[in-house]
Length: 221
Image 1 (spheres, rainbow, N blue to C red):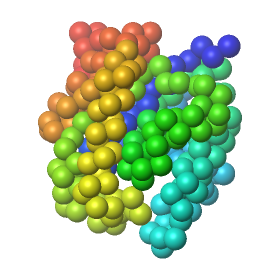
Image 2 (cartoon, rainbow, N blue to C red):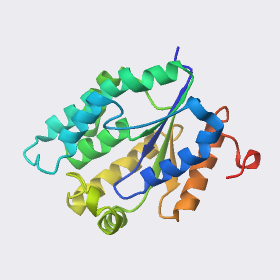
Image 3 (cartoon, rainbow, N blue to C red):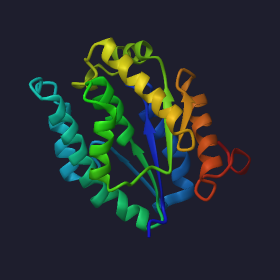
Image 4 (cartoon, rainbow, N blue to C red):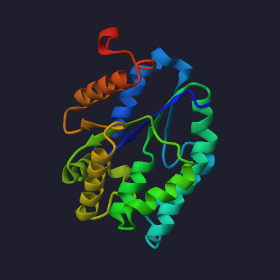
């Protein structure tokens, strides 16, 4: 029995989802303690982190698009088996920086492999494990890339240096996912200042997962 909940954080590069996630963790950790698990994709354990290094290495320019998609799916499978499922079985709240939607958007649309093909591949990799809630941090692709250039020079990876057209395809795919899965995916306006982004995300989490996240009236946010 999976009694915990999986919340995934999604968005185009430069949306600030990781900064928002870190701020949200700081607010939830005192309440939840060991019930809170924070992880990321690709990564989350030793094997998946090793695959991450291969995928994001800026020197791996010869990597085939389908190889990239398969490596993401492989890292995700190991992540689920070793990290996510045990936490869900232990009634924990799992906050994950990226999940299947990233593969659909980046490899399916950005790389042009096909959104349905990438989705189907990941259904095999995940055995159908779907997030209970997805927070989509939405920002215009050009704004996101400008943020990367301004603030993340020491962390730019192989996907960050793709052309604007690539990132426009990624954002368009995310918006299609949002339209197709309104019950699971909730939009956060990532063009706002970070504190407002965090407040909006926490309000959504409180409304969707009241057993884990207190409403604004019940805590000091």
